[in-house]
Image (cartoon, rainbow, N blue to C red; front, side, top):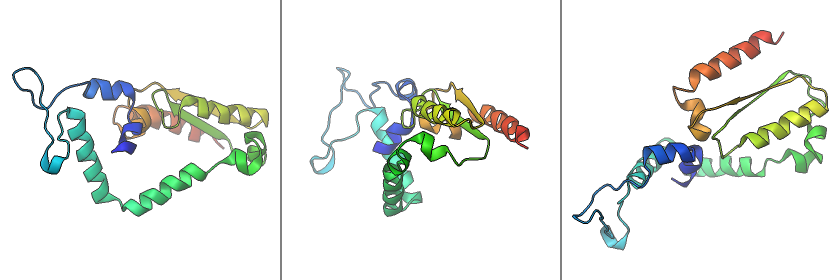
Length: 160
């Protein structure tokens, strides 16, 4: 559930849920401790996150997700090579770096640091920032797929 919050943008979360309540009493509020003193889901976002969390756990082994997350957390080219420019010096491929304007897991600033390092080593690099409000998951959302497909197709057709 916590991970899912980082995959969506603030704009998407606000539009989808805001501070909408599931159930309201006559004063507009509903508060319960739920079963065994555990807090109930008064806000719509809680229900959504519980559903996404349960769905994710049915599809993925929690230990494998922890290992993947740790691998991502520990992957650090600058630590390994000293800086990104050194890390990229032996690259011979043409590069395409893409980002999404609303991605706070891997923000555009991180992508631009990669682009600047590739440019500093005189590598062929293209950069595109897609302006989509769906956060890190933009590449999974049908509204983002046509633009992504067009950009990738154009880049791959130009790579010879």
